[in-house]
Image (tube, rainbow, N blue to C red; front, side, top):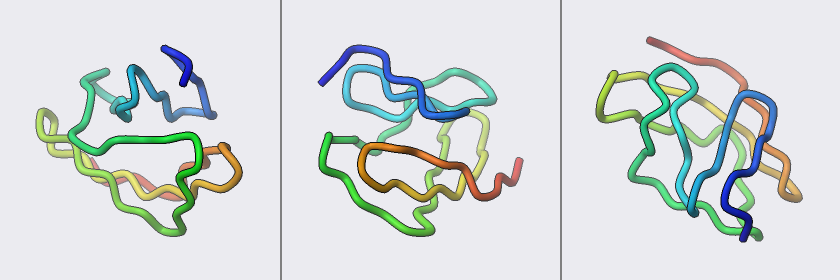
Length: 66
């Protein structure tokens, strides 16, 4: 897995998702074969919720609540 992968606004760094608001790594892990629809990611630092779709290595943000 690459060290820094950009997928629109969502970044994966060292196998973990990075919050687009505060640039903190989240507790959720990412792998190359991750598939998800309407996955809610939670940032423990800024308390943001980010809803994403992940398909074929492409991350697309659906909505965010900050």
